[in-house]
Length: 260
Image 1 (cartoon, helix red, strand yellow):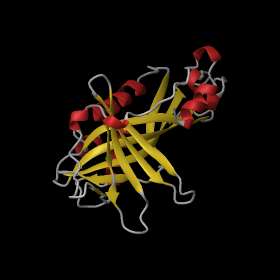
Image 2 (cartoon, helix red, strand yellow):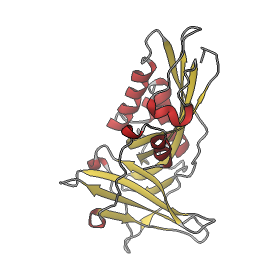
Image 3 (spheres, helix red, strand yellow):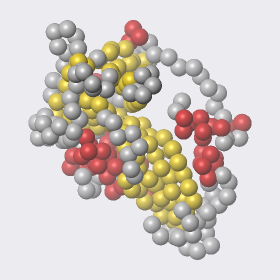
Image 4 (cartoon, one colour):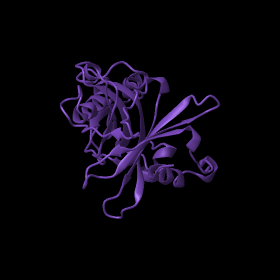
């Protein structure tokens, strides 16, 4: 459960709150990938853990040492849509992985372009960069579907637009693979909902109460924080978004304007 989940849950009526269930990972079904790092570099490592009766579900984890507190923190968790698409991570003779600069131009899609592409999937349905940069994986298709489904949710009564937002967690992590790199990164985007005519208002849904309360307004802006994982080749070809997860982390009334 993320901090956003806890905040959202606390504002729900007690009858709608889901009971907290302690979680754990099966170490016997977890592969660790520890990169060799130079002195002074941030210490981090990745893991791929599997679950299910046939270990058919996989999740990528990244843990990093906080430079100030020196405590280890889980900084990213991303479920893979299809574990078979996970590229082979390269190990040296001692079993160590190799860290790659996610922003390196030796990769077909440096991380800033990856981030722009996934945001474009939400903002335009991939029309500008999303479908040019990313292969049509299940994860990429889900982002495009989220765009198409959400912008029409009000019909003629209102509008919805997605847009880029400042990246709250700009750190990204990459490991060398047999074809390029496995890149884990974060992005933020906003969703702006507005009524189509004066006098109309939007009633906050239960999941929004932690940020918006219960007062109807003409417009709301929601901020989402997302984690993404992609297989990025070195060859000049599209990258593959393997999974992503988003949580609402802020929301606010956007004033009386009905325009976006």
